[in-house]
Image 1 (cartoon, rainbow, N blue to C red):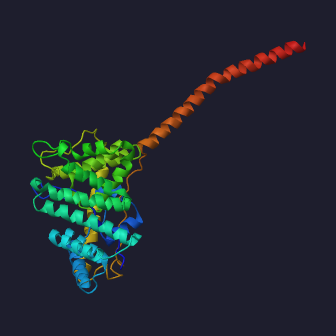
Image 2 (cartoon, rainbow, N blue to C red):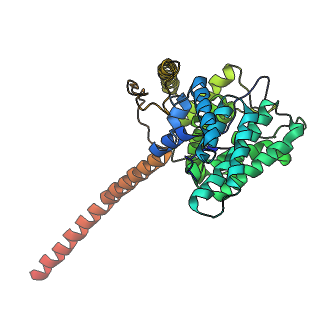
Length: 385
């Protein structure tokens, strides 16, 4: 059995409002493996859009290549995953599910419980669940057919049972998003959850886990399709503003991204839900920094896409051309001033308070010590006379 490169089409949730809304799944193929080997998802990059997103031709060429290869090499399990991701990225949901069913047909006869086979089953369940919910979404997100979503949720749950710590534990937050959608207790008469996502997350995740939640939701943005989700950005803003371990400016920047999406017509994933959350406004610097970061990120993404398309149209692809990126030079990101987290600020205050207390104590105690010392000295002198 040829080992598959790590891939998971992880679950996310979306519904259609007035127009098609983004999908909150982490579509992880061989590209995701390279990203995750380098670092955890960067929250600031997720907020500003300065992360890698590939053009459709990239996935079209990959799909054509792996489909041809699989006709001759049915056991190349990693290529089933690549094909499914490519189809999902291109909106070809039925084909994506077919690829996953074909992978299952290859997995079923394989015996044993070694780590490699266990990983393949993990990826199968994660992929098929995501492909299934995406098909439901693109078919109109009809809540009369939530059974399909529940089935997808079950498949994702099985994937997490097999590998609960995959991808920095991001699946936990993907699962919460899906539960927010399908939990009947939270539904209103209009068929939508009573709470916006950011509130729902607050009932499922304690504040000590908010830094991990921020990383998880950043992963949904960078490795999935939540880049245009006002729900996810509002939730990211909420957890960043609440977590003591996160700089507050990240929360304000995420809120500004949510505002930007709202201003351009994006709505909550579910009808009747206002995704906005109560917050104090950030500073003028936050707004200025956000505008500068977004402008630079847009320029960076356009340059990267132009570089890729020029070579893809010439028949070159990074999967097969080791020199594809040889002439690419990424511009340095825009820098914003370093900001301490609230936890760091709290510790600084505690250290300052301790120093002030010690100083005051010394001011009070020192004269007493001097008086005692003089009194003892005077007694000794009288005793010596």
